[in-house]
Length: 235
Picture 1 (cartoon, helix red, strand yellow):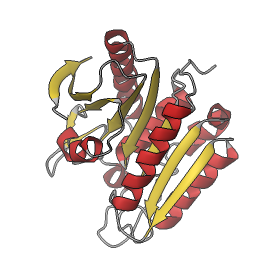
Picture 2 (cartoon, rainbow, N blue to C red; picture 1 turned 180 degrees about the vertical axis):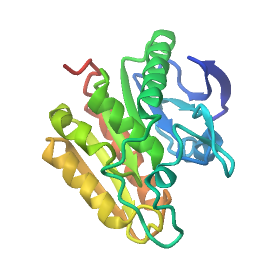
Picture 3 (tube, one colour; picture 1 turned 60 degrees about the horizontal axis):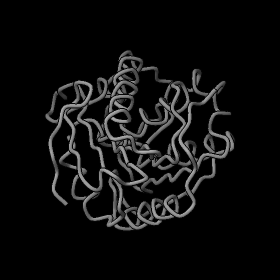
């Protein structure tokens, strides 16, 4: 699978796979990463989709890119040894990031005309993906959240009903040094309470996407191809 580098709605984007596929995966990287860090993961899935990997608009202090200033830094809890729960955090850049992602998806939908979309992300990328589903207009065919956390819970909780019936794959490492395992469990419970159809993938590892998650994502995407759910605005 060869990547083409495109600018879509002002975001540098890796584009790969079948542009005529009935399903697209938009995969958002975490803070301090870039799309190239997720490219091998998407390349190896072997599922016939259109793959779009946009780059966050901000430069991270330690290198890579981000969607807003690091959640852990904003929370004042940045530590190599103390995992953080970000449920009460409302990052100042969250609304701007959500707007950038919504514009990106609108532009991509107009260009590629893929009938259905799966939105996913790792860490900060997963948080942004879920924020858009809850507080934007997108109703994706599925949601993939790898090593993510609840954020802005005060704003999310009243809109949790938008998750009803949505297929979601959520994974988290039991030894995650950045976002504790109980953070992933709390996210899982929030999704389930909102009525999402949650597939939960805990694993014995850290802040990462290991082989067991790769297999789970591949199975999840193949299932959506067989039993699609149409993308539509959420009201």
